[in-house]
Length: 217
Image (cartoon, rainbow, N blue to C red; front, side, top):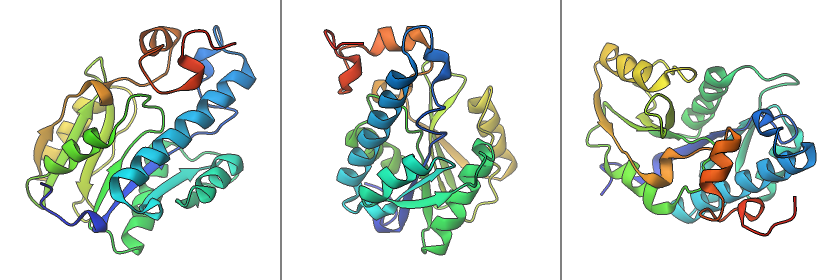
């Protein structure tokens, strides 16, 4: 079981934008299809988080995209507008953490909105791995270089290092901050959707309509 009250945890979902995200999928999906995929991934993420925590408002969506924020609000999530232009992933995460702290949260889970296999069991595994207050839990991507989920206390002085080689950077940041570290490796956390190869791997195995065999494209 988690060593803290899940009512004091907020899940932060940074979203680049429905129309602008997943540009590397352009060789296989046109602009409308990419926007539809981004929308479906966001809505699925919000549904999983809401089912897991029992209160959709405990999910904080941070985005410069008005459409993404409107969808999130309609689903009951809390929203933070970055501004007319994106401020970068780490800054977006910090904005989400600030909102979580203002709501009285003690812990935050940083969860990308593009994990097609994410499940309530995966989120529980992350929470259960947080053994003590000054603790960080990381879930690497399939390559072992990126970070696909991160759970941490709000007041730890931890420096978010999302970007290239973020998994190693986050381990180093945990050491600098004097935090203990757990790593959770799960198939339902390691896959994100960035490349045509990712689409091929996940096709038919994730509950995303556009990825199912036979769907028109």
